[in-house]
Image 1 (cartoon, helix red, strand yellow):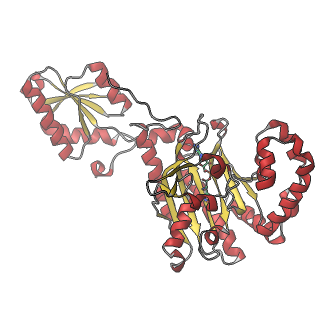
Image 2 (cartoon, protein in one colour):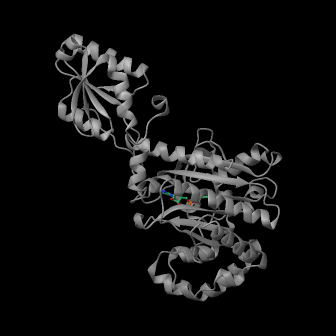
Image 3 (cartoon, protein in one colour):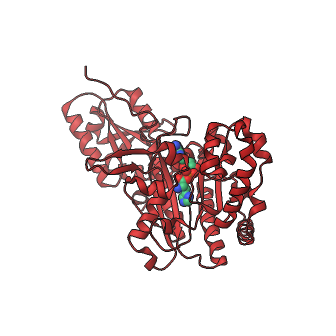
Length: 438
Ligand code: HAM
């Protein structure tokens, strides 16, 4: 016997019929993002390691602990992308997109890689649906509009997927000037308490003290509770921006909540940051994270440019997708053809029946003389509207026995009536493919 393999720890196979729901969620993203003028970008799965160390930031957990980095055969340091914002900004600069009408609006759908401890909702290869709005925002009003538009688009997408009980957690991490002031205040507060901090937090005290606020350690919560608040150190411009963004979102009836502990784990953010969490997810409860980044384009070799975006964890989104949406997104599966008996002419007849139906636009799976139990189970799992049975009798009489999955009723249908009959059956399903509907 050969050696058996399993998918690598933290990775998994996505299989039919679930993949149909993934595809439908992605189609919804394409449609909704298209309403806002976002076009799809596909960047490579790996990039120069330095893109992420510079872009995401040395002090982030992603760069510090979680990157899949390797040296290629030419001795270059490469990294499987742990996120896509840095890559999209790299592409914006590389292709001189600042010369296009601004803002440039790009979305992406695809796998990302982080070496994290796998658990429910946390994978080493996971999938994101993300969007970046880069450029524009040259006035205070334009920057408010940029942030609001991105959150509105995200909200519309989630509403279209059937989510009703979500809340967008909003915070501001301030502009560069506010952050510098706040950083000094945090260091002054935490330094005398360093011996009560975890090793991680002590490291952050030196690299990025804001991230201490993100600590999940229960021992540190009391200290964090009493720490100075960023709100007290915000510049007037940052304060006004945040107030305006929250006001506009409220007017647009997006359910938001200010969460002053939200700092996000990536170093590029300035001003608005946001996250959406779902109670249904357990410890890994963030479905989506995002925010504005005013320095990233410049950091990666471009002109100073405003950027704002988000990424949704698709794996987690699918875990909490409302059941009704899931059912509605599962298209009817192919009809199943089954033969009774093993006469060679039956196999050929079922083959030509399947081809005839495919020519008429129907999906068909030919299960041959598979057992009734497995055939029925297949039809149910794959949402096949009916099983079509061909046996000696049917051949002789020029009929097909149609057993509908919904009520398990059987009836003999004349071959000449089969196509209209199946069209009718399909039209009573919730989702009908456009080719067949017409
Ligand atoms: P992030 O918060 O690191 O942000 O990731 C966004 C989302 O990806 C998370 O909310 C979560 O749903 C999902 N995610 C992250 N790690 C994992 C994992 N190991 N397993 C499953 N899902 C995961 C970013 O990546 C930023 N690039 C977002 C952004 C875009 N900000 C501005 N533009």
